[in-house]
Length: 419
Image 1 (cartoon, rainbow, N blue to C red):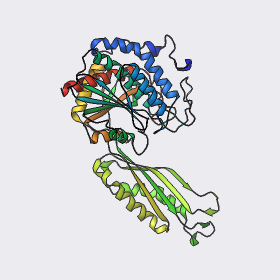
Image 2 (image 1 turned 45 degrees about the horizontal axis):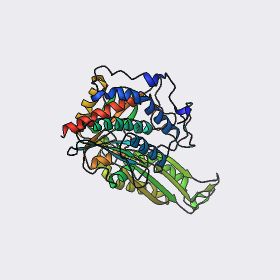
Image 3 (image 1 turned 45 degrees about the vertical axis):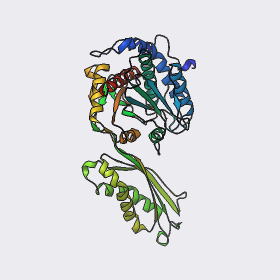
Image 4 (image 1 turned 90 degrees about the vertical axis):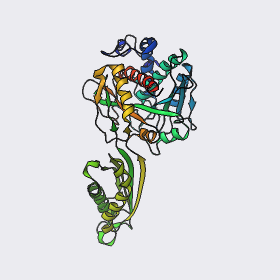
């Protein structure tokens, strides 16, 4: 690692979490001491990943780094078939259950404007969602659990899943499942950074915690023409305006109000000249919805409303509706495990209630196969917080040891619960 990515000697981050949080329980076998020794390296790893981000589907160097770190801990990682993700079992008692922990590893297509030594060195790519933190936490968990396994004190297997392509469609979780990532797994857990919670708190919720999320693209076409004579052609700019302003409101009127359906267009394009009516126009966006039944109906509803709105304009419609991911629906028993683990790791004050988010998360696909839960990890910084998916997003790095403690406790308690 370069000097810019090495934690400075005496850094607050290197020394601010040696003590146990108030009301928490120590990890077995003096693992807290080992964690304290590992924290500077985990933070340096996070900064290295942050400085060298890779877009969804191309996480080859990140996966190679993960595999190297796990191998140094005495584990036997295997790359996904494409080489852009990693699965690694920490093998304890051979007749014990298998519990999975998942971290996503991809970055977003954004420039990094932050004035920090670990600023992205890749133009147009940035870790603006905290996946670098998720990855570093799971590496730390693997190192500690490997120590327990060596001592013969791990009551089963813990599968570490470092997943690619969470930010795009098709989802990377489906690649992991196809590669056998859920084989024999009885429960699965994950953390996701939340800048609205302070370090030392974890947001928990039974049932839906994220929304379903799909991608919608509408392409309009017509003969084109002169802006002086719109009556002789199809005015695609007018049609596009109707699409963007009318369709979202009309779609929301076709479903129950408490379904929380939200259709938002994030991109629109039409024309190249002020006096030419274009022959092509398009708009793309996301449809998000809180409940599964409405999500199942959404493609048919959107298709009908789009055609009804555009029909009077005379434009030809080509609708591409790309299924994304269902809501993440947390299993109640898995949340019981996470609640007990959070209290043990961070003290009772570490437990926080969290609302359902309109954001999408492809962790939901794992929950189609096995029960589990996603929790929100507090990473809030002092001063105004910056939301996820903004290029200036950053975290309080004390969240890394906090997350490691939570996930180690989660793995141990999950194994014990199904022993």
